[in-house]
Length: 496
Ligand code: HEM
Image (cartoon, rainbow, N blue to C red; front, side):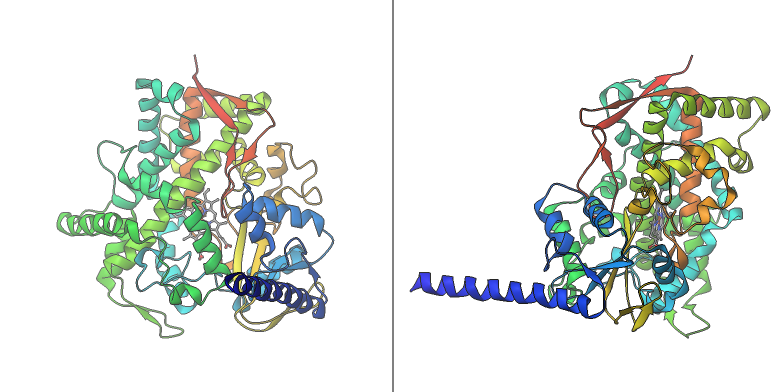
């Protein structure tokens, strides 16, 4: 009897599985869109869960397989999902038709999962108002004022490596770089202190927050494929970090109110937002209270982004410098000449360093720390190339890594060639998007670049690099959206 029930359940499940796969295929066929048959029900997410590969690598395979299609439908259980390949369609989604695609594509319980209530994950009017309110933190004037914080963190970092050379021989360089990033973004968010703080509970928090465990992989897959289940299942993503992070922000804000000094950091902008009272979007009338919790959620994401992707960007540049001695030599020359020419190092000087800037851009081209972007369609619309009808609630994936390694856009894409960025407009092209594109472009783009460049320039002024690539070449660790090279390390050697 038991066997019969079990057998019936299996038959029903297999039938539902088959029907779901067929209906996904039919859905896209009717719209004249190619369909990814790797797994008709769970699409690339099946390979992600069952194989030890990063999700962007699986998308890269699909990109190559369907390179002549404007877009490919993929199975995501009951939610239609479109993986968009044609750059004109990508531009349409991220920029031209933003009003149809402004949703991040992932669901969160903001009112309970307090740290998820940040600009990256917010949507609609809430996102618009929060983004408008914190954008002033990243103007050139603000970055200029903030430069002294990053410069001090970088100088202290180099001193630490000189004082404790064991760090260089016993640790791995990615982790070592993330201690610099944590000190720099920590000082930018919480305020600078006399001693830079390289190891802190916040660094552990940043490392854990987006770590790809079985639990987080599953949670993100549910938040993408079954948006309404997040509320029904009461899924939390960052709850365990609330006490630490919100507690720290509250303490800094109260202390700063007492001191009444300007430090040109995140705490300053939080206090000015709180002083101005309720935030109001003049266009829509939407209102938000700048509570400590809401501001802490923004700081939480800034901190996480300031550590993980920024350390990846720095690491990849060092890896390539170690593999390309001619490029390394030019970088050292530019740095040495700059320090000989000027008495002090400033924001304007770092912005003038043309070759180092090109090297950094090429590093982000070859290894964009975020592999792809996601959006959700919020109203029925049509994509221009292929005249593809996209209905409300369709999930969208747009490529980043895949375009950066497409020989159609970058000749010999595996070659590290900073001269690709000799043309001024390269950074603005749709096929180059390490920081995304359009209205949801990375808000910390210029800050991240400044933090990474300041760290790299001080480091390379004092050290040279050798890269050690393991057997089988550079590989990538299993991540949800991140691009994290493994099987490679960099040796930092003190310059004579
Ligand atoms: C090298 C380091 C970084 C890289 C490669 C990076 C990349 C990205 C990418 C690809 C996106 C998605 C854009 C899109 O969907 O179109 C994004 C969004 C975002 N990034 Fe970054 N990021 C970096 C560092 C930072 C830093 C340091 C901060 C803050 C201080 C930051 C704040 C944000 C925010 C708030 C968003 C969400 C924007 C929105 O949805 O409106 N990022 N970033």
